[in-house]
Length: 214
Image 1: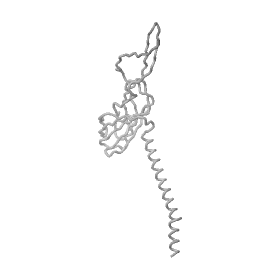
Image 2: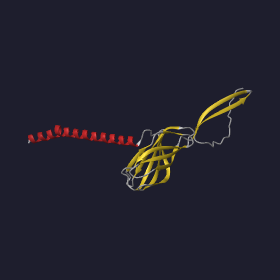
Image 3: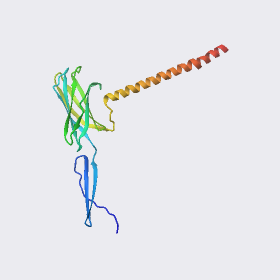
Image 4: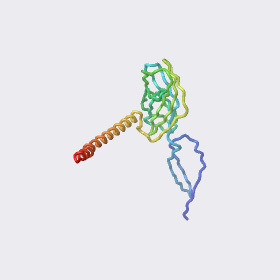
């Protein structure tokens, strides 16, 4: 006699986000059936936890350290970050990129880079960290009070994650904007040339013919 049925197992998924492997063993009539399945819990995620600046002094190069927590249960390769320093008018006065590094699973890894503070003035700034990893961007803003030879960093709220925007780095965005502007200007020039040709070839000629007929 053939038939089908369902077996249920009560399980509380109290685990970290990541990829897991499950194995089900069913025993029946002195036989055994094994079912293996891979599944994921939550989504791959990493976040910036803190920003630290070493040996700060205006006009010199300082080392930046960005601490990143990988909540996934597997390493995340080729992660890097940009640090944008923004003045009170909203202008980006400085931008630094860290080296790429692998984020170790379920732990905090530090991304490091070097910040040239030449031309920086004393005052209040926003310091935006853009973390790039696995086709995602995590953004977090810190507030910085900058003195001549000291800097005080304050965490501002929580971060923001945006997905599926690989390659949308700050410099690449500016290049895209410049290319779009160039294309629009070129189109306007072509339209103007076309209108001038139409005017001299048709409209002006028509006006001259009307004058001659008078």
